[in-house]
Length: 80
Image 1 (cartoon, rainbow, N blue to C red):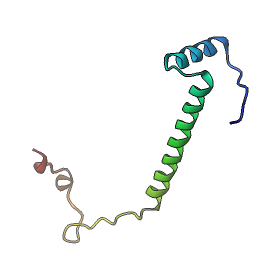
Image 2: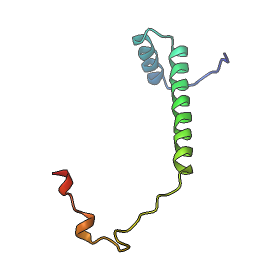
Image 3: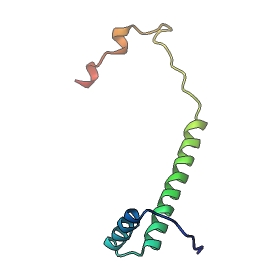
């Protein structure tokens, strides 16, 4: 593990210490877990975004080769 120094305002440092103590963790461990969780979520997001951007857009096929009317587009009879 690499040690780093972080400068925080006094009230933030007290809040951080209290928060870590509530979870029976040291400030160092609590921050390490928080940063690791954020890093993991960022990595998952990047994978999901790459997967979404790699998809080819679907082509919409018009009914009988014509565009649907406004009423047809907003028809909701199947939902009631």
